[in-house]
Length: 480
Image (cartoon, rainbow, N blue to C red; front, side, top):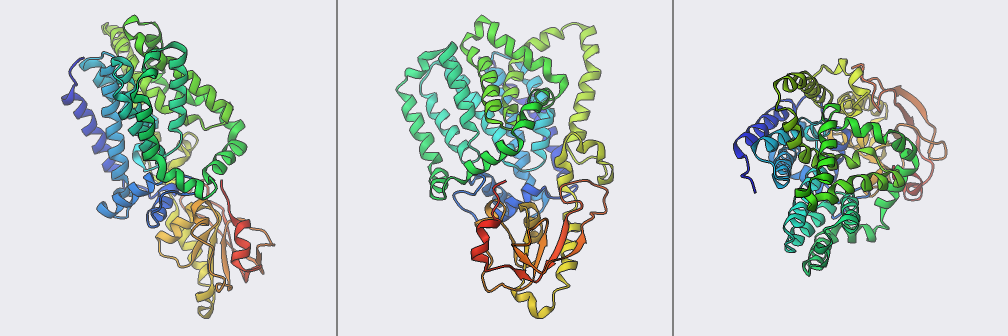
C-alpha cells in the first residue's frame, strides 16, 4: 500500500475550502436550504421527503456559525473537503501513489457536481460524502477479504440511510456485481450479518418514523418517477458526461476499463460492473440522472493512474492543459456564484440551482405588501399559505407571521388553527374550492432579471378558507 500524500492533497483541500468559503455568502439561501432551516427548528427523526441528517447538520451549522448562507454552508464546505480526501484514499486503494492521489483530489474538487453541492447544503452534498466513504470501505473489504470491514460498511450504510435511502441503490448494484464477477468469498463472512444489523440499528430511527407516518418518502419517490421519469431517462446519458466535466470523461472511462482488464485489480472488477448495473436500476425506476454521479468519482479515482501514464509525454501534457483549464473554469462558473445575478441567464441553462438562490428578499417584500392590505383588526386570524416549501421557508426566515404550506413536511407542521378563519394571502396557484373571495393582488417580479421558479408567481388575497382548515388540509398536501 502506497503512502498517503497528505501534503499535496491537503493543499488541494485548502484551496477548495478557501474558494468555497470566499463565495459562500454571495446571492442567498437556496430554496432547499430555507426548507432545512425550517426543518432544523423542528428537529425530528424523519420528514416527509427525507431522513433527519441534513436538517440536523443545517441546525448545527447555523447554531454555530450563524443563520446566514455563509453559516449554513460551513457544513457543505466540510462535506466537500472530506469527499476530496476520501476519493484520494480510494485512488490509493487502487494502488495509486502520490501522482494519482493528487490528480484524483483535483478532479474531485473541480468536478462540477462536487462544486455545485459543495457550495450549498443539500441532501446530495451529504450523499456524495456517504457514497465516497462507502466506496472506500467496500474496496478495502474486497481487497483484503477481511470480513471485519463489514462493520465499517454497515456503519456507513446506516448513517447514509439517515440522509437518503439512495445509498441502498449503491449497495444493491455492488452486491449484484459481486455476485456476478466476485470476489464472492466476502459474502460468506460471519461479519456480514453483524454489519447488516449495525446498518439496520443506525437506520432504524428514520425507518421507524417513516413507517409510523405511512412511508411518505415512497410517495415522494413515486411523484418524482411519474412527473419526471421520462425526462430523466432521456437526459440520463448526456448528463453522465457533464456531471464531473466532459474533460474528465476519458479519465473515468479509463478507470472502468482498468478495473475490468487489470489482473492486479481483479478484486475490484465488480466496481466496474456495478456502475452500469446502477444506471440500469435508475433508468427502470425513472430516478434523477445525478443519483449515479458519485459513482463516477470512484471510477475517476481508478482512472487517474492510466491518465498520468498517458500524460508522460511532453506534447500530450501540453495538449491537455487548455481543455483542463477550460473544464475547471466552466465547473467553477457554473457551480459557484461568481457572476453578477443579472448575468446568470446562460448559466441557468446548465445549473438552474444558481437562480434558486436569488430573489427571496424581493418575494418577501411582495408578500408583505399584500399582507399590509389586511386590516390590522383581522391579522390575528389571517394566514399566509404558500404552494412550495421554498416560499414558506423564505417568508418564515424573513419574519412574516402565520406562514403555512401543504408542501412536504410543511404539511406536517400545519394546518393553521381553525380559529384562523380570516383573510388568506395565497402565494402561487390555487383552486376556488379551497379559498373564497380571492383577488389577484400582485405578480412577483424579483427585479433581478433572473428567471427562476418564483419569477412571475401570482399572489392573491382571499377572504378566507372555504371551510375549516382541519377539513381542507388533506387536499392541500403535496408530495412533489
